[in-house]
Structures are given as structure tokens and as C-alpha cells.
Length: 221
Image (cartoon, rainbow, N blue to C red; front, side, top):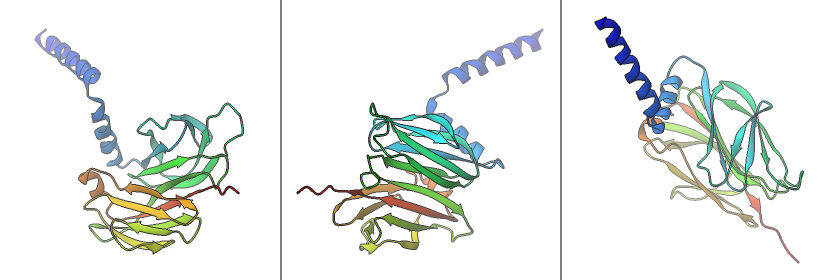
């Protein structure tokens, strides 16, 4: 009877712990899953304007709003997946749709930070995905492309360079600020790499692919 009573108490404690576990610990659960042999990744979508439906491989996964931190889809199986974004509007068909085939890598948070406009020129944002390699410890490589082509790119306080950039070395000691600009287009500035030291350390040996799309400023006569 004592054993039964002890088991009952332990079960009650486990249930209470499950109910009151802080939501911020959910990320730790995800980290443990990503660290196992499961071939899973995740997708984080940020809205730079308006509400957007997120569709993965034809299945609607939720809506992200500009006031939300982001919408995360987890787990995502490693491999190529089609991601679509649809901006909500009372006037159907007013906004162009976003559709990309992106490769998801084990243990990596693929990021899409985007604002959909009525045209491709009036849409802007950036996409970050990765490929696992056997890179140098403490370093990661970044390949950056920009639309329109030949835009100027500045990483942290370094000199501006012209896109595209190939095998640009970044340290994992801190986050990095990227600024892309071109005459006639609105500048886009953002940070890449996780804020947490432990999360950045796990990126050693990755090659990152960064696609930037700038908003074309309308010209009025």
C-alpha cells in the first residue's frame, strides 16, 4: 500500500509540474529534440507588415501578425519544402503571393522575415537557411544574394561591399548586423544568428545562405 501511495504522489507531482512548467522551457524541449538523431528542423516566420498565412507543403500552419514576435513551425523534417506566404486582405488578389522551395537542415532554425506588397518590387525582407559542412571551429560562412543585384552590403562596421557575397566569414562570438542598400530602394537592416551564446555555438560548421529583397521606392512625376 505504501508503494501505491508513493506512486500516486509522484503522479500528482508530475501532473502539476506539466501544468505549471514555464512556457519558456518549451524551447529547451525543442533543443533536446534537435540534439537527438531525429532529422528535424524548424521554421520561424516574421511579418514586417500585415497578417500573413504560412503554408508548408500545401498545408496551412497558422497566421503571423506584424505585432507577433514570430510564428514557429516545429518540427519540420530535413529536406526540401515549399513555403508559401499569403497576406490577408479584404480585396482578394491585391497582394502578390510568396512561394519558395527551401532546404531545411537538421538542428537549424530557417528564418523568413518578410513584408508582402502588391508587386514584387514593393515586397521586401530576407530569408536565411543553411547547409551543414565540416567548417572551421568558431567560424561560419555566409553566402549573400540581393534583389536587385549589385546592392551594397555592410556587415557590422566593416566596409561596404557589393553583393553577391560568397563564403563571407562570420564569428559565432556575437550576433551580426547586416545592412543592404541601393539607390532608389529602401535600406534594409537586420541581425542574424541567435542571441544566446549556446545557440550560436551550435552553428559552427554551417554554411548560411542569406537572400535579401529590397523595397523599390515609387517615383512620382
